[in-house]
Amino acid sequence: MLNNIGLPGLLLIAVVVLVLFGRGKISSLMGEVGKGITSFKKGINEGQDEIKNASEEEAKDITPQRTDAGTHPATDLKTEKDKV
Image 1 (cartoon, rainbow, N blue to C red):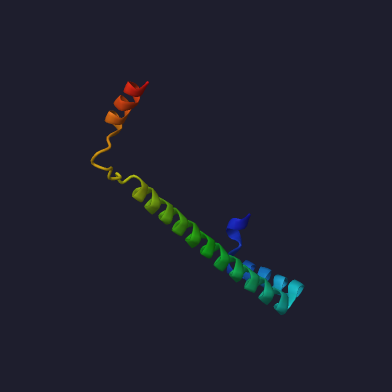
Image 2: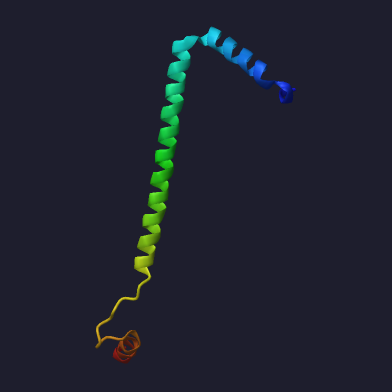
């Protein structure tokens, strides 16, 4: 049914919508649609930035930390065992 609309059908639909809603209502509606699209794009960009920042922080967290030359976890366990 919708496969055979064509250009004349679309023009007829546009005229009917224009008559029913008026030029001002359609203009404000399109403005709201534009604001919604802009807000959606902004949200997508913020989400991507959040993901990027989180992955950068995770990359920083997995770098090995330098330990003091005198303390080694294995020797610390032995001394704790000897104390008991």
